[in-house]
Length: 418
Image 1 (cartoon, rainbow, N blue to C red):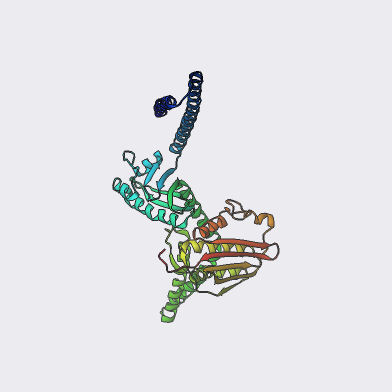
Image 2 (cartoon, rainbow, N blue to C red; image 1 turned 120 degrees about the vertical axis):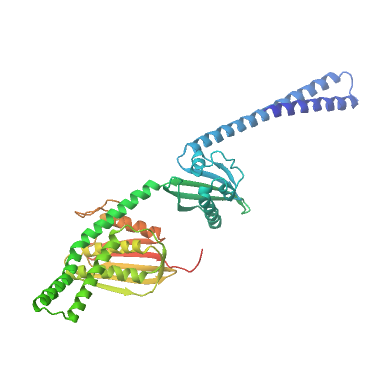
């Protein structure tokens, strides 16, 4: 405002000097001269009023903008999320207090510095900040809002996981303007999900235990019979010894399969053959299907390679096949087929069970929604989440009295570093 007053004084002086010089040079009759001076004064007053009005209005707008900016900054600093603004070259413009404390940059003049430069001030978070450069570039290349989970260790050893949203901004000519980064701490949510995942695995094992117990009893019966025979005859037949060893190995395989489901596994995303995953699951349920008089048919039409975690995909197919078998307590037919199309592989699992009512079908996949007496309602919820994390989709169709069809899509693995 003080600059506006100063400018007003300067303009007023110039106006008075110029108008006086101009008026003196004009051949104005003496009787008209007073009116000219009056007109000059009126014009000066009018122009002064206009100038002051414009200056005051501009000052009011600037004050409102400053107040709005302050309110926005107060809100951003009060947020329990990481919020930062960067320019088109990745330089930090503004970060809220949560973000500064998170990276240990409270006493660092961060403005105008890039992630690489700030990494020198906080060695512990150096790797995390350098990773931000790559993820920022992915957001710029995508030219749209991106979302991903990022994890890193805190100085006290605790692992933090953030749901990070990045919004790239562009000028009208397409040049990079700025980047907005918002990160929400979902560490506790991830811990809760892992606990639910573990409970669901244990639930699956409990339901499989009865069927697998029969499968273990058969080789144990054979081993016991041969041992009793050798005890009575006092002779050791190598053929019987080999049979017992084979039966023991069979029991070992069954126990190993159970441990894969029971033991908490670290996520290990890598290229894997989907055929191997499905064969493993089919072998796991073969005996139970025989007991329930269910015909299992596997129709592989592709040797697709996908990128994912083998144990998680096994859990997905175990949940689906288990549900299918439960829908056919008096026997039926279970078909598993695969095919690839348009850089994707499709897995279709169909049963001829009792089906699902349309009203129930709307709620399939919702946490804790189940009509099973001993179910937790987390099987399909967990499965859908795992498929989503593998960049895939899952669709369920069903008709009462005819059966259910689960169609899953997963992207094919491409040998491409990007």
